[in-house]
Image 1 (cartoon, rainbow, N blue to C red):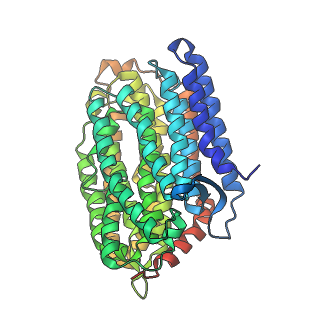
Image 2 (cartoon, rainbow, N blue to C red):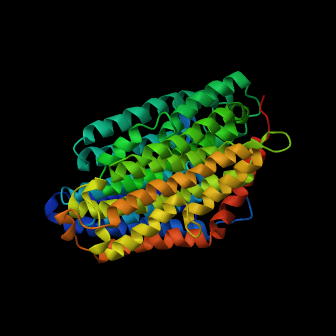
Image 3 (tube, rainbow, N blue to C red):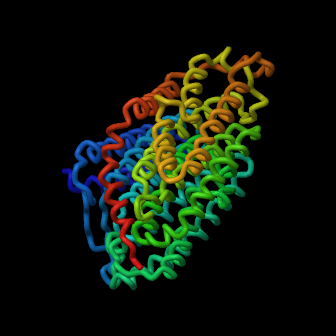
Length: 501
């Protein structure tokens, strides 16, 4: 029963997506929605045993599966999760369920295809998180772009084609270099494509490591996105439908950071140390400069998109803080904080985009200036948005605080000034989030159309309430999450401390 959990986590949503597609035309939209809900719920329930049955004391990979796929090239269908990837798979399945509920009534044009695209993408992303074979990872990593491209290109805003093409080109360009890197590593490890074999390579000269680092870095940095290759994200968010934005912010960005944890740090430790100062600088630029850019936005989606880049800057900062007696070790606080921050950002950003989507469905505008006084007509909604706004700013007792606090703690250990600069983001985060909240929610109603807005219905209430429980639950009791990560993060730290020169 529990032998094939990972395959189920990948294939249940994909098969459900194909069944939803098979419902065909818009006449059977009701059936498509129900199938999508059952499929996403089944996809989520399948992932829960991964958390409950996960052995927190032993390191290494669990729930492993192995089948030969292309024996001639030594490419296998190999799956396994450690403490880091298990949380991402559950987060992905959870967000997919939320997205199906969020787009329930809103999507009137081709709802079957819309839901199916999300379900298939959910399965592919789970595949990328669980893959133990480099080529299998690459297939899933690239495959998830296709549904995302279609979601933005078909159900997006007026400039949707531009945004989807930009997203596709940016991410594809980076990934091709990664493929070359993977083929080189396979030659070095005797023709194997196993990621564990790559990680266990004993000898890689520094010059080669640096070149490989650049190849992998370009691929994953675009996905995260790090400054200066971040420009595709605000465009994609503004044009994407609500569900697209939720998945893009909550999951897709994490795949990039996951690549750092799985490929760059363990396979290329010396190059990681060599380039660490540069990445710390880039991350601080993302955290501070992008926080300033977010302050001046007039479009709500753009503001939250820039805030996502700023929060992900925190993550990349936490991943590359080397210190210790030898200067070879990653900081355990910062590393675990970065992973917790990713999970938390998944909940918070999905909730923020859901809130903006709720208002957009009523007024069909994302412009901050068109709102004002929303609390007078939508008090329930205003309360939820307040909570998520606070979580976005990193208020204690919300999930946003836990990861950021851990990263700042780790950063102060390494260098006081890095920690101080990173902490500025909390001030920026509070300023742009509250500034938006004040202008949209409080004040007098100036726009007569706002008077006509209705408070949230039962479905919207359910989605926002579930996300609120997740944000508060993780903020008040982060222990279960940290426990799962703990061993895998320690293993990674000891692995990265070994030189390969």
